[in-house]
Image 1 (cartoon, one colour):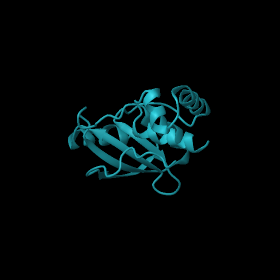
Image 2 (image 1 turned 30 degrees about the vertical axis):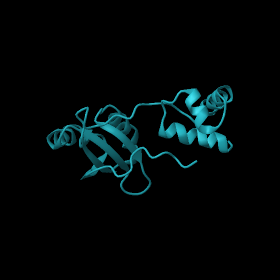
Image 3 (image 1 turned 90 degrees about the vertical axis):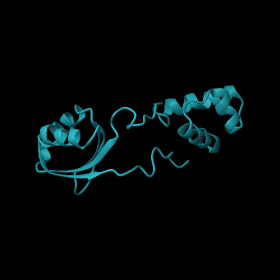
Length: 148
């Protein structure tokens, strides 16, 4: 990966809907070599997809909570993760070393919807020992491009 590839990645992270021609102009290439480089970045896995960034408030999921989960049994991990994957309000989850075992981002319509989700589904997942909720006041950095 050279400086031009890193520039292509940086531009695409900021504006993923550019045409190949627009991207080529931004990185100082003609369209054909830019397109070849994009395809190689996709083939190598450096670019692993394209997606839309959705405003949670507009789609009725403006109430966000970070949920720290500590497990009581290591053997429950697979069942916990499978159950977590079935809950559509869970928008991001990471397994961590140390405590807590998981950090989960949940987006619901409001606090009442979160409380119901927490009590009826999240707290009942296999192996959950403790959950700590922190309400997200606002996102300070969101979808920051990776350094190139």
